[in-house]
Length: 447
Image (cartoon, rainbow, N blue to C red; front, side):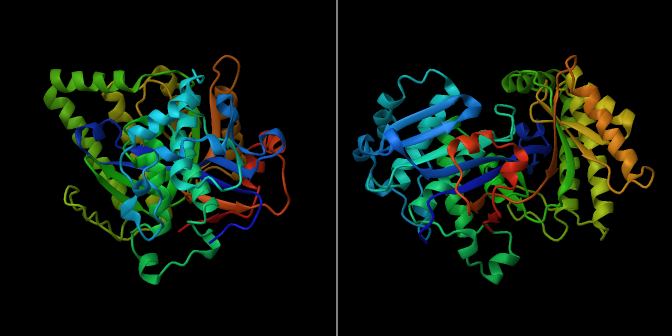
């Protein structure tokens, strides 16, 4: 399983909450889906004055950190907590080791920026558990086409990239091309051992980054597609998720998730019957969306009610129904008071141009909105559609409004691996734009 090349790249997708945000707080189901905005990690041998050092570079958070491999606190890691191989998934820890965290504190003492501090912590914590002191020093360079800190799972994509890269380097993981998937596994909803192995250690990385993650973001970043989740511990993969055109608009307006959750909580206490009815309606929308997205299967977990499967319809018909449900879900969230004038501006412009349906994603109160574009619109020609999309961009991305728009895809593959035929330098990788990152290699994806 050894990776016999000097350099390679891995990548993982971000995510949006498609249905069910805020209702999920009250133990109702929600659906998260991957988007084709990804984090990329280049792995190359360390060189020059850093030849004996591990180097982590993350330009999006202005981070460059170098440290000698030999000086890491290897003795702090308990043997039973080291990675035990893909055939021993049960041995993956579920909690962080306080002794290792304490041993890493001297390395991190000069990192005052929170993003930088937790990124370096996750990197060294995983390296100590997945690698060995005799491995050649490497440089890890991260680039992301995701807005960082916008509720799109950017930290989980970093953790998944780290986990997959380190497992490859330590010869504990096959490349996707060498992966062997049985027919039974191919036909089931179960994750492959490779996905489980990457995801298990990525979850540990997320604990370094977030403290108490739900596991949703790293699961979507690892497996792609979509997932239905429900507290306390239900995760139902939706592997055959249809890829749909999506506009992701970042208002760049800051918001605190805790404040918005508290606002809904106050409504539940003050206007219990009406607010609970809204949350119930969001649940029905989510379940109907699941029915459209996973028509051949039912949730098997005991705390997810069975759904009544829909009659067969074409993919386009299902997509049109899904887009309508997006509009309904947004209206329900507005009634909970978690939208914002900037989010409503995005919706209003999209409605005026007739390009699709828009909803907030995540906590609301700012942040991002998603617009699912209409499917096979018989009214508009391709040229008309292109003109409308150009107007959408022009009206929202300007000096006065200041939004950021990403043309992307909802759904798509999870963690991927790329071999580099031609070597590239770290500085070249720093300068790559989104198209260059997407085309850096003939991507292979673990199944």
